[in-house]
Image (cartoon, rainbow, N blue to C red; front, top):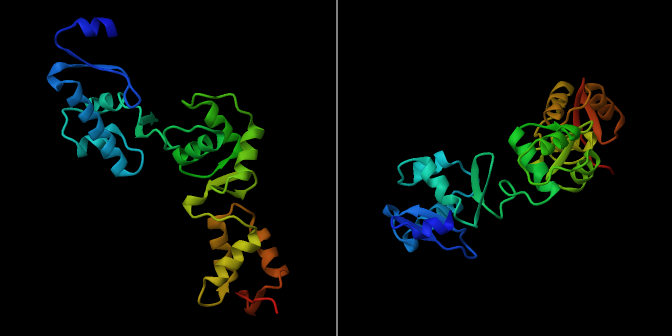
Length: 228
């Protein structure tokens, strides 16, 4: 096809180099220099946007006949990559995950809510990623190591960027009480902990009652008290 395209009078050829894949376009789009300028315009717009974006969203920012025209130009650039119909810089893990941790991040981010590690492993195997031969145990190991992922229940992980923080139930209670300007009732503490952890209510209550740093100042009402 490349050879035939070079013979055609009304086809412009984009030569492959470090920045561009070999491509062909109708010459009404311009010469090779002009087409490369169009491609760079798409790259610049995505870079300025700062996160993965669909061709439809790019179409609102650029003056082209159809989103498919923008997607076609994007495929010419080696600086860009796409995943799940979204375009981004090739160095962004969200569109070009290069290791297991990046793939975990993409699966969780796409799902939009916490997942069990076995479901994350299935999500990777069912995905468009290049490498699918990954074990559930390998996924679990990477979840434990990476600070982007927070264990919030039995085998259930969330993204730290969603507002979850690492630590035990006692650590979460400590943060809640420290950040409160007034003592908190047991029910309010339980509610706030359950927003951050998928644990049993009894686990929260046991921590409140057994840890000396949680001081009861009224009926079922607590404050945090620093150790002497």
